[in-house]
Image (cartoon, rainbow, N blue to C red; front, side, top):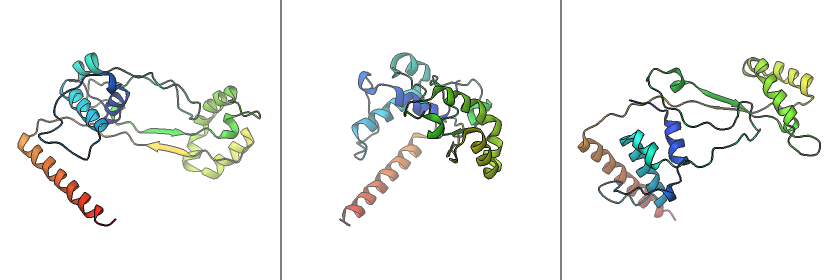
Length: 197
């Protein structure tokens, strides 16, 4: 059995050109009116992915061109394909994702062009002072000013990796009851909000 992070499962669905694949079937026993056609297609694709990962990747997954380095982040490189893991205890499944933006004063030269040399050197320098960024912002700002001549403090972008999930075959009646309850709640919400306008 293969394991994948929720983020990578969503990446696979988002990278699949859904207009070029043929995914048919019912999303549910009855129409779920509040989903757009695109959202329904995404959910059907996710359903197929969960049902049989290997078949989905071989027959349905039509990757869109991988994202290239935008030179905006310290830890950014040409995008890699989503990874599958053989073991649920794999450390990469639960590892936190942390990144830091490269300040414009470093990223661009005086002519407004990307300064690849500065970007490269900043990416090498930043990990040596990352501990200061995380623990002593004033010391980090001082080092940034000394090394790069700027006062800008790069904004941190931190996102937690989702917890690994195992898909379990729940009782179909329980699942249908929960879905029906959510559809009713959505209907009530819609009805109550339209009355306010």
